[in-house]
Image: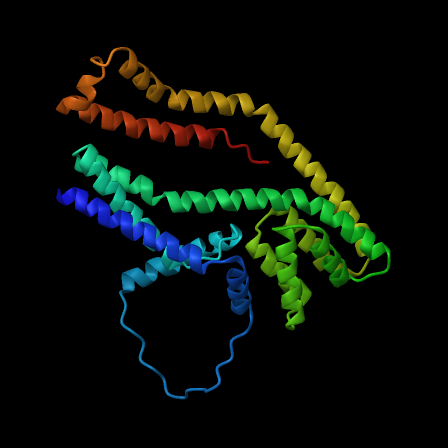
Length: 315
């Protein structure tokens, strides 16, 4: 009864947090919050007295300075187009962990498996951020060659680079239009265009965009026909994307085979549970069988990660 009550409390807290986040994080508010972060903050009153620094753990400070996990998480959310607060993500992970542990204790009655359920649910927000980031970067990469063609045509008609970016913003959709809109807003506030492009490269860490920013920097230092450079850059990016698609097509069979081999034990266990339920009964109701099942799950998850690592082609 106490576990059911705990599960209900965690579920109510999770629903309340998600409702509050959906209410507050509207698109205009997110864009305004991002622009407010980009604007320089000037304090109206300058304090000449030094305030004492709050005491903090030296180990925690060294750890955060070395890894800077919260900053990396915030950058990942920006790259995914999710302008949330890090505290909200951490709160959601904590609530999901509690819900998973409570549900695991109710259904499995095993502390280790309950902790595993809580850890799996706690990683769901991070997996969602990674999924949104990967999808956003792919969409940006598909839009970039066409945008460069439009920039080239606009500059050949006699317009400047900022004006060409204005045309791209009006013709394309997010994420490319939103990122270039931010660049133009930063330039309007007084930031140099090259520095604004560097900031966009931080928000969209893609190699094709890095080539574009490097080409614009080189043209600003050396001086040449920027429209010709942009046209050649568009051809290079299309060639790179075509090569990437060919590599994915050639490795599709190996990737599918690795996924099937990694998931095969789970399918075999499910098949035996449906055909002969008495066969896997020992794995779930015997002490030795439970230990074997835990070890098998750990080894299978490790094998999935190793197979995925081996099949990653770097070029």
